[in-house]
Structure formats: structure tokens, C-alpha cells
Amino acid sequence: MARRRRTSLKISAQQAREALEFLVHEGKIVAAEVTRALERREKLVKELKTRLAELGDQGAAAGRRFGRSAAREWKASRPARRRAVSAATRAARRAQGEYMAAVRRLSKAARKQIQEVRKSSGVRAAIDAAKKLAR
Image 1 (cartoon, rainbow, N blue to C red):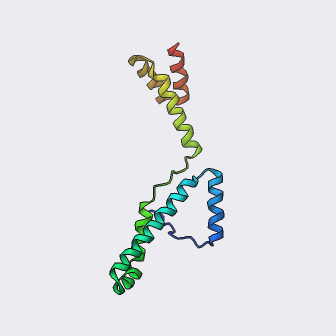
Image 2: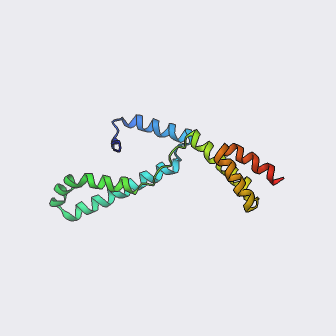
């Protein structure tokens, strides 16, 4: 079963500012992303205010009821953030790329041979064998 995530943080405005500065400094997010997110938020607030103004008194009551759905819309409109890649995954991807580069220049028969080496001895041994065959 999927773990439920908290949707809101209970932090002060000062803590939020410090967190943003820290994330930008670390390179986790770009300052332009923060600016765009704030612009999208302002645009959403402006649109909601104009819609409520058009509805008049009925709109105020409806706004209180449906405020959560507007927040969900805003959250869904954000671009997905890039997930951090673990060291093991990065190493596996690097090894796969090295393997593909080594095997690419081999004949089909040699590729089959290297494929057997990979199954029996692993990726590192297959890369080494492929480099020897390529010479």
C-alpha cells in the first residue's frame, strides 16, 4: 500500500524563505522555478477573485466550500520535480552505458559470446571481454 504523504507544511514564512534560499544555493531548484511558481499562484488567485466577483454574494459561500479543489488544481499544474538518483542506480546506468558502448562495435557472433559472459560473470567481466574482442 502506498504511503500517504503530508500535503501541507506547518512552517513560518521565514522558515519557508530560508528553505528556498538553501535549496537554490544547493542547486536542488532553480530560482526561476520559484519565480514561475509564484507567478502561477498569483494568476490562479486573480482568476479565482474575478470568478468570485462575477458570482457576487453566492460566490463567497461557494469559494469557502471549493477552496480546496482550487488548491489541488494549482498543485497539479506544477511541473514534476526531478527525483534524486541513488548511487547504486547511477553506477548501474554508467555500467550499462559502458557495456553498450563496448558491444556496439562487435559482430553479432561476438555479441552473443559477450552476452553469455555477462550472464555467467556479470557486467564488468562482459565489458572487459568486449574490449579485448574489439582489439
